[in-house]
Length: 237
Image (cartoon, rainbow, N blue to C red; front, side, top):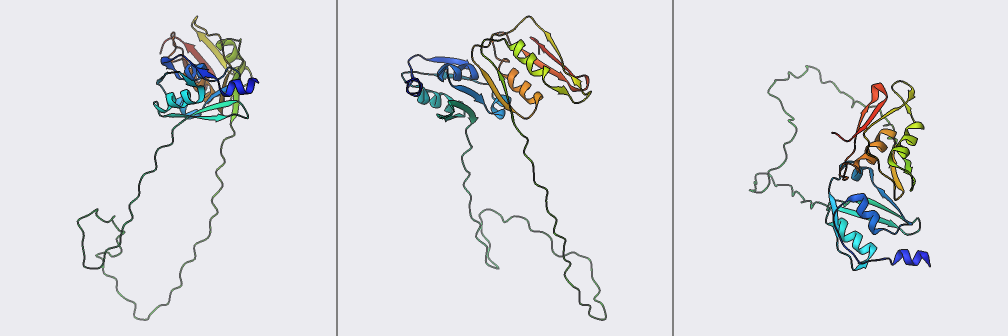
């Protein structure tokens, strides 16, 4: 069955210093989707190398682990999400309260709030009983997480055509009009594998997309001018 063939796909060859998305795409079965988490798309600038002679999930995990990354493999949806490896939990040390009059040479106790001042306070002639002030309970508003939208470019089209179709469906909020896309280069790329990104805004999706092409053989760079509703793609930084 095709599903079993994908699951046990064998990687025989090896690769060295290959851009992240291209490397993952080469290891994952062609019928599966590959996604990069927003922070990986924004911050990762390295490359991947791998040695084959094993099934693809093991080759992929080993290759990503050397770059501080990890794959989330969803067999049901046939999808792989690349994320940063979670940092190891830091060990906490319990602080033992000191007895009065004793000191230790270990870590100094954290500074405490000053409870006494140098100013003199004259007591009232008649004792006054005061009531504790009851502070009103303030309900903090719930933090609403942004709704993520999936941005895709289909296999068989080109980068320029796919990105232009994204922009045609979005409005520039600064001037409430369509975005102007200026492609100041003859460089374009054919899309050999489906591209998919998760982002809350068109601008974030744009950043994720062109991050893939900063390390390409002919790099592409994007500059956005929100107040002019202008996006410029060029081969110069």
